[in-house]
Image (cartoon, rainbow, N blue to C red; front, side, top):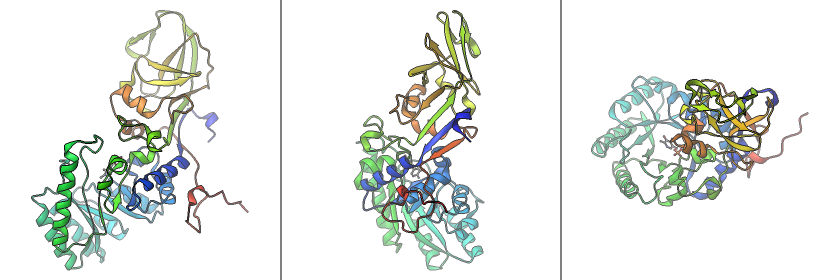
Length: 399
Ligand SMILES: *Cc1c(COP(=O)(O)O)cnc(C)c1O
């Protein structure tokens, strides 16, 4: 559909995404690159983003759930794919049959993986996850020796192949945080135990976006950036995207659905939390919390309308919110830009995060399914010669 006729849209710049992948790869030149595309690629659209990341040199894809990993396979993506958020009874066998690397953090999961391998008639590719200190998923260091020994036994029985050992940082976005060195040490010790037990993982990995950008000692064999690939700084206190050579990929905008003069003293939106200070022009932006605009943005969220930043006036409703244009003019159909790269004067996702007391991860990931994604910079399709830079190849002339 033509953007000119759309209520609202999220433009996703795949050229920027490919450039971000290359920038991140250059920061970790000796490590393989896993593009983390969970949660619909942080709201950007999983399949187009995964394809673009592969075009730019990602050799692994990272998903949280097995369903996400299976969706990547169903779309024809053949890159090595790891998923990590399992619950008992999950689709282990489907993943083994689809050549997906599965993560095991506990003995029950190892049992389900080996059972699935037997049913599938082929070994499961298993990556063992350690809780190096995050306190979320992963085996505790105390359980690690047993998990490693059982995994090695299953490997000897031909049921699994342990392809990786990994962990996840707790505070990599706070440079100098004492947990970083501690978790590196715990991880290194666990690696030594795994190797002593006879495991020979292809990839040992620990680094998310902040680790990729700021902790070269944490790169090991593979890095797993997510948010930075989408052009959002994982450490906004240290620098914005441009400081790391990154460019935001998503722009969210809509078209004004109403522009009208109202008298002073007019309440605006539910609860009348905003009252016009005098006669003014109100514009209606057709995006609300059902589209991912946080209700916490009521009275604080920034929007570019008619050349200036405006602030959400009153409450964000399910489908819409209002801005006060004062004496400025606008027309129904004019663009309201909530956030984008920032270089056309619009706010960024980081600005929205600050206005709403959250992180930019949440701002982009929550953009609702009702907002169509409009892709720009899509590659013309499979390139027969993936080197050096298929993503930017000129479109092939169509016959
Ligand atoms: C989400 C996630 C990542 C990516 O994190 P970013 O901070 O977005 O780079 C990496 N690894 C795991 C296990 C994750 O869950």
